[in-house]
Structure formats: C-alpha cells, structure tokens
Amino acid sequence: MLRHLFLLLTVILPGTSNTNPPASLRTAEPDARMLGRWDITIATPDGAKPSWLEVERSGRDAVVGRFVGVVGSARPVSKIVADADSLTFSIPHQWEAGDGDLSVRGKVQGKGLTGSMTFPDGKTYTWTAVRAPRLYHSTPQWGAPVKLLHANDLGGWHASGPTNQWKVVNGVLSSPRSGTNLVTDRTFGDFKLHVEFRYPKESNSGVYLRGRHEVQIQDDYGNEPANDRFSGIYGFISPIVIAAR
Image (cartoon, rainbow, N blue to C red; front, side, top):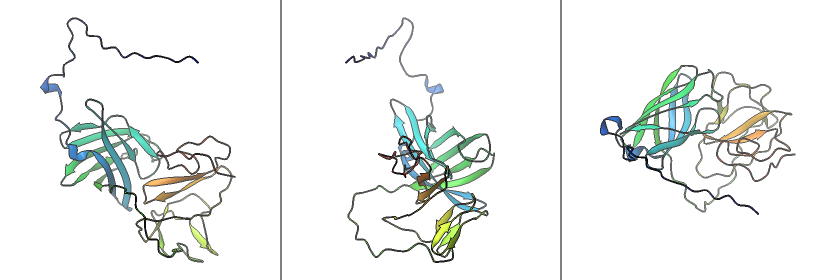
C-alpha cells in the first residue's frame, strides 16, 4: 500500500520577514467574551425568531464559526472579522428570500451579545444573544409521557407565521401544502421525543429541536448518509445509516 508523505516547509526569502504587520494595519485583539456558542433571538415584525452562532479561534489569529439562521442548516463561517468587542461576517444565502448575502454585526454587551442582521432580501432586524448552556451528561428522572397533539384541533401549538396550513384530524397532524412552521406553546428541559410520520415521495420536512437544530425528514431512501439528509441534524451530525423504507 502506498502512502503519501507531506512535508511542511517554511521558507524565508531575502528581504522578507515573517513578523506581524504594523500596528496601524491590525485590528484590536478580539474580546474573549465573544467566543463560544450563542442562542440568538431576532426581533422581526412576525415575532421573535431563533438563531444560533458559534465563534471560535482558528490557528494563530483567525476567528471562524458556524451559524444557524431562521431557516436552513448549520453553515460554516470561514472568516469572522473580530475587532475588540465587535464582530462582523457575511455568508451566502441559503433558503432565505432574496439573492444577497446574509450579514451579521454584533457587539459584546454585558454577559451577552447584541447586534443587527441583514437578510438576503435586504431587510434588517436587531437581535440579542445569550450564551448557550453547556450540555452535561445527566440521568433525568422522567415523568409521565405528555401527548403533544389534541384529537381534532391545534391546541397547544401556534404557527410561527401567517401562512399556516397545518391541521389535526383524528389525532393526525398534517400539512396539505407548504407553509409556516408550527411551534409548541410549552417549553421543555431534558426530553425524549417520539414522532411517527410518513411523507410523500420527494418531499422535505423536519422537526426543529428547541427551534434551532433540525432533524431532517425527507425522501432519501437509498442515498448515502449526510448531515443534510434523512435523520441528520441539519448541518451538524450525519446519521450512521439512512434508516428509511
């Protein structure tokens, strides 16, 4: 078996230097308080919308991250411009309306972040963020199961926008056409979620956990596992197998 050997060489040519650029060309050192994972709440005319951001150092002096918008998967942020207690970045549009980039500006404020977000359609909204809680391994004491659906109405749920298509008939939730997302009125701490579902051929849907991380439900039978396919955590975690019929 042949194996490739890669060598990393540092070459300093005469008349050049590997020192840092002059202070006049450098931004201020990033405030360490902006690093980490953030739960974002965006203020829109249709109400508060969830988002998520991860900010981390990469190598000597780069700052990179990942971002989850109101819709779509976790997206890599290849460059975050961090200047003291402020940050900015732009990423290509994904499933948002409009053809521009999605641009984010933020600033450390107390223990959180605050800023503005310009969407690909040019609309700008303000946002605030709190640090996402660390996830510790624990052994919860589970209570009695909670049935989330009523028999014939949407009690316990509300639509996240004006184009609601969802209905409940004989205990079955369905959406005859594409429309807005549906959200539980209640919030939950640790939980196990049991969902039984079916979908038409070539369809695409999903279940958002805490409004930010989507479990993909779509017609991927026979495809290779990927983080944007059936049962993946969209943009984060790929399933081991495509467990679809």
